[in-house]
Image (cartoon, rainbow, N blue to C red; front, side, top):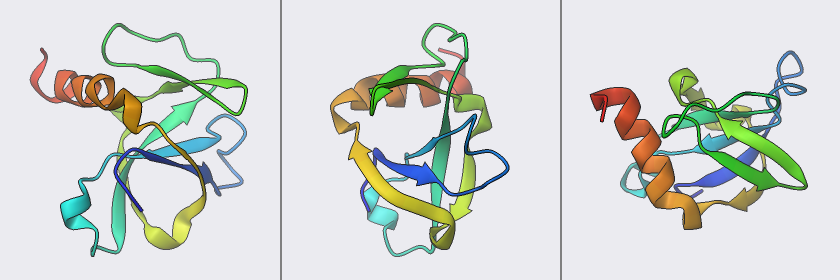
Length: 101
């Protein structure tokens, strides 16, 4: 597990609209049994800064930053990829949600 890894959403109630979860938790907290994740959703119109977009497995998904949540490790699906190369954009989105700039 690493910060900015993307996992399959295992929840059958939401995984069609939210196929992936983005782990944004810092690696210093790797021993916790939970992760802070941001849903990566389909068909969402992004707001500047707040909702970054990614191409994952030929799908365009949008970071629904305002819906970040804590999730138990047992509820994370398989590792899909890392979006660590988008670190600055991800941190900007979370920072914008918390501080407003």
